[in-house]
Length: 334
Ligand code: BTN
Image (spheres, rainbow, N blue to C red):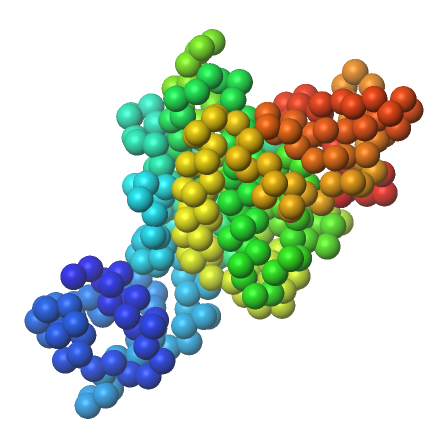
């Protein structure tokens, strides 16, 4: 019996659960139950123990939303491979860097690194990703797809889709968030999640891909430069969110979506789901192409994950590739 199993049982039980019941349920001794409870307390869980009544997890939400640990995440993971091999760091430089180091040592596809804070979190286009402790999600997943390197950029879209599906199932966020192509997740026009995908490859073979996800979960304050465009689940929904559970749900959806991606190594099986969440769909956008900006109407993605844009000046259909340009709404960030 592992302490995660006891944690699961305590979570499911509204009232006290007796030590005897736990012993019988798991077929273990009272000492084993007691040891597991003590370990959970050491991990930061608050468990009340009353003579004649048993054990109860106190203030489930506050505890679990604040405490993110190896054991809390593991207790929610329900996947076969995504996030199964899993490392939790209280503090690290960057989880993308951690995963790269593990990949170089031969770690398997599906290895996940989660951190409670990052000292050198990185965003796209060389930006920093400010990563304070106790509030948000910083995680990176190692993948070893057996496809050509030019297919790997779609994995960012697969991850964006998985993140939004996990958020969409939270009561406060049903039908409230969208994907700003290619991979920002937004609520009410502000960003709550960014994804940074990096790859090690040769011309015709991928060594590994690292998909790093940063989610503003319970953060309430942002730096001046992103104040206008960033928000968090807490600020938008009014309730703190259990980070461990959210991570596990993202892995759950990722495993399902990746299986579809793997059939063709493109987005063809996921286009409809992705386009359903796309905030830019049928909206006026400005394409910031280094070769020249232009305006148009975004129609959705194609099987390669490119954004189909009908250019306003000549009604020509342009396929926008994620690597080279960014897309903005005409009137702001989205
Ligand atoms: C973006 O600029 O939108 C992408 C942000 C990606 C941030 C995440 S946090 C976990 C992982 N580790 C990093 O250093 N970056 C990514």
